[in-house]
Image (tube, rainbow, N blue to C red; front, side):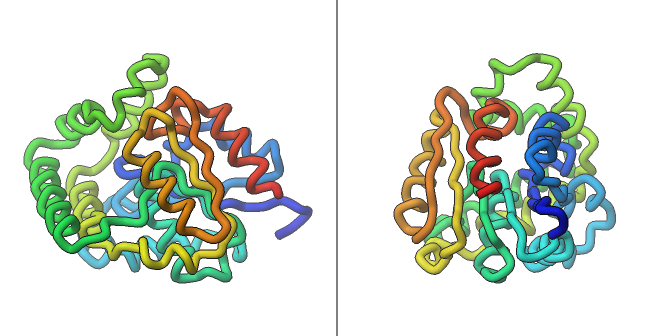
Length: 253
């Protein structure tokens, strides 16, 4: 660290990229002395490209985080990025000073659940390659998980749709299967050993993830939960001011 400035590492969700966080969020963090390090996870943004299975694994994703930070540092992850952030914190507990998990899960607890999810993700990956990225964006944004976004500014939604359409379908499909919750190990049993100060951030309307976050908060020794009223899965997009008001003080403490 230099001059008191921190460099939190930010990990985006599936089908996003480092640009998904948006200029406003980056400006809010930077103005608070928190200069974000924006990472493209395998298959996304600058990390799309050659579809080599070795590039789309948990190990590769964790390595991409390890190569980005100035450790010890803070890690912020949304959805898939939160899942990777938690795996990183479990693997390298001494490197993470503060952990922020937005709409994230430790994984699927049973092998039956993981097998079903693997099968579903493999089927969807096949359709992404066959139908193309435009089909995928229409499908993805129609999921009930993202229904609360409908109330956002149409120009903002159009911008995010355009960004998603830049994804390479083969890379996206490889990331979906390689980083599927069905393929990654469950971390539920690891949570009592994660003593990194952790902020669990979730939208009130995202009922499934509110339940997951409440269970995580009870299991982790130094976790706090913030439920943001009136929004769903993508808190940083739907309620950027509430996201800032929760995250900035936590990382600045």
